[in-house]
Each structure stands twice: as C-alpha cells, then as structure tokens.
Image (cartoon, rainbow, N blue to C red; front, side, top):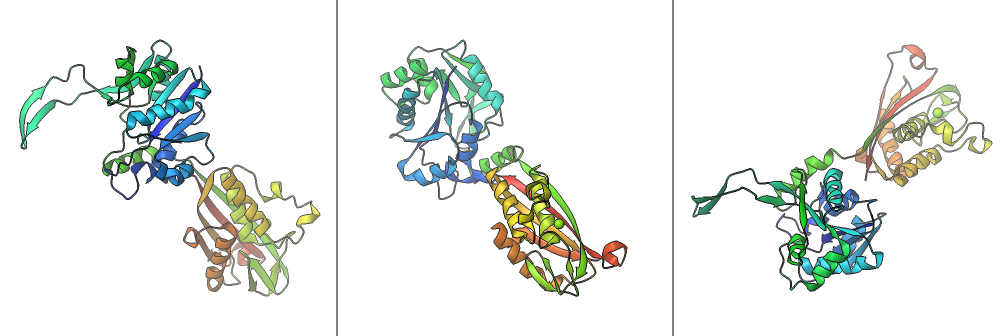
Length: 376
Ligand code: MG
C-alpha cells in the first residue's frame, strides 16, 4: 500500500499568541511543524501546504527531511486540494491528511488509521465526548445536550487517494474538514481510537501541554571521558588549547592536551563511537605532535552530522599545579571557538587531590569530562 501524506500548514493562526503563525513557533526545542513532519518521516512522500510568505520558515522546518512544499489556497479545503493535486503524480493508494498544529500525533494513531483504510475508503481518529454538554447564556447554564454518539475529531484523516481527490474536485467548498468532503461524495469513514496526547495547538497554554508530551520523545545522550598524561621536563603545559607556563610539560604522542582529550572522549562516548584512539590511532605517525583541536573538531562534526547539538560540556582538571583558575576563562573561550558552541555551555574547573595519589605527587594531570548531546 503506497501512502502519500499532506500536512496542512497554510494557516495564519496567531490565536496561540506570538508574532509568527503557531506552526513556526518553537515547542520543546524545535518548530511545531518540524515535530509534525518528523512524526510522519519514512511513511511515504510528504507534501506540506504553506502560505507563500512562510517559505523560509517551512524550508527550515523541512531541512534534511523528504518533504515538498506547495502553496495553499484561500481556505483550508483549497489548501488540501492543492496538496492532493501535487501528490497526484506519485499515484499513492491512500493519503493521510494531517493538521500541522498536531505535533504530538503518535505512531499508534497513524497505524490505526492505515489499518482501517484496508477495509474502508476513509478513516479518522476521534475520542468519545465524556464530559457533560451544556449550553450557556450570559454566564448561566441554559440547557443540557445529550452527548451519546458525539466524538471529538482528530487528524490524520485517511482516505483512498483517487476517491478523495475526486470528492475534493467535485465539492462546492465550505466543508468543515476532509471527512465532510468524503461523506458528501458517499464515502464511508471509519472512526478509530484517537489519543488525548494528539492535541491541537490552538491557545497559548497548549504550547506547554505539547512541550510536556514532546519532551518524552527527546533524544538526549550523555557521555563521559577520562584521561591522564604524565609530566616530563619542559617549560609549559597545553590545557584546553591554552599554553600555561609550568616547570614541566605533559608527555604524549600528540600535544598531550589532557583536558581536550577528555572532552573529545566524552563526545565520542555520547555517540557510542569509542574514543580518540579509534579515530586517530597513536600508531599512525601523522598524529605525532598534532594539535588536539583536530580531534575535538572531528568529534563535534561527527555529533552534528548525526543530528545532535551539544547541550553542554563540563570538565574537571585534577592537579596540584599549575593553578588553573587564572587561565579558565581563556580556556573556555578557546573551547567555545573550536566547538562553535556558546561559552555559557562550557564549564572548565579544577581540583587538587589533596596531595594524594599520582596527581598529588605531581607526576601528571588527570581530566574528567561530561558531555550532553541533544537531537535537533
Ligand atoms: Mg590523551
């Protein structure tokens, strides 16, 4: 069964507050539209129907996803019709039509609609109305309504593609939704279970509800790195890219920047990508004396190529001497430049080991780092 997907995103709705239409506003770290597009990724070709003024926002939301942008019409049904016409060349068997403002749609709801489409020409998720229904007048209850048989409609609404395209072409306009268009053409539409999580962002408070739902889907990785280098005769050590005068230097195959090595390993660790030695083998003479920034940059680029942003870095250097405090700000700046990361996300601190152990005897420096990566 070939599926086509239409995301209806041409609305100018600012009832939810903010300057931009709600679909381009951020929720849980990315735009509403991007969450919605990701929820359908891999299901089939996606058409996002947009307002021509929103090209830049839509392009950003669809980056690196398989999405075509199509300009919508004067109202919702004209926009859906534009999406259907754009999908016609793909000749899908079925189509799912979804409101961009429902970014929390679950795989289970999508699967239920697709499964019902095997036996019906239309299917849509809905929840039975369970609250009592009243009419009101001037702040007073003026009557009650029977809720039996009433449902709250959600999307995606799914249809046989050829039938819904013909139904839209034949419809005079003004339908409440695609189910109304389908029914006007005599199609049967099955009701499948919706989900309270599949809320439609309408009012400002819906953003916080959606944030709570989507945070549970956030992909956050944590990695740690630990490194030690011994002292040998010299005049300075290199720590986090900064030359710090000292009575010794650190011994190592590269520039022996123990702090940067620990951070690099923390990032590789968060990616389950081993450690520096795997990517830059010490047996390879080309890395002799290499600036450790090469290693760190490689780890950062690898993280970003996998779709992760660096959340934060925390590094502890363990040594009696040299004193780190006077150099910490410069180290943070250097790391910020190499990683292309805001300095407020980088912590560099130091401790002694109270003259105990190898760091206490000033035989070398140890470094411990933590990195978080957040899928973006
Ligand atoms: Mg090392």
